[in-house]
Length: 69
Image 1: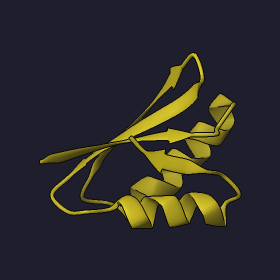
Image 2: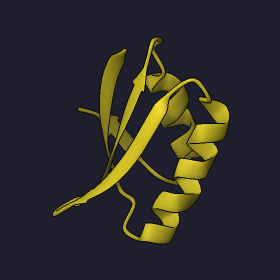
Image 3: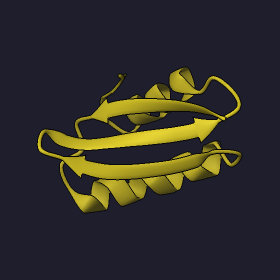
Image 4: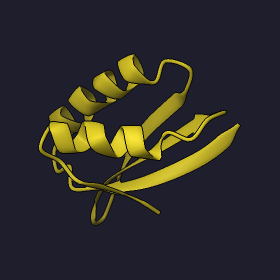
């Protein structure tokens, strides 16, 4: 499985939980984890396919930013 890590502008646990739920519905074949760093939430996705465009567009649709690290 490939691993992709994204930096986000999420600031609350509620926002992270909401987006985690959406991501798991859209990318059901992946392992997705959020964790809180000093500068905000980061999420990591393990999957067998390229999903960075899908993930970033989902964030943008919900009013958040994400950037692949």
